Image (tube, rainbow, N blue to C red; front, side, top):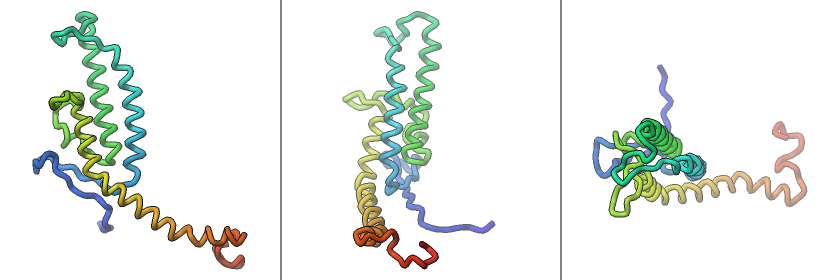
Length: 168
């Protein structure tokens, strides 16, 4: 089988310095921010449906014995959704390396933030500069190609090349 080789922009990152926990993402993918916004909107919408889960101080379901199964099912579905959305944001399987078998809804740190929230903050911080640099590079490259069209438009021309050209 033939191989097509090119630089696709992917870089390898370890999670908390652990060589067994590795993700491979393209930190210069300018669509990360758009996918982030889309995924966060969907997670907020789904998260609102989780507000009906009530627990007692000991962690047991407040609604009685039958509620435990329903709550567990709902939490598992939300866990899967979070993992799917994180993988969508980074266009790669990041949730396996980031969380392992833990729930992304696990509370961590002194502030008691969700594990997925802490991961997202760290991951986006790690790629932020590269995303911003990449966006600037995209602007510069697109300006290079659109500049001739802008100049033609200023002159009232539809295309920046002669009408008889095969491109016209």
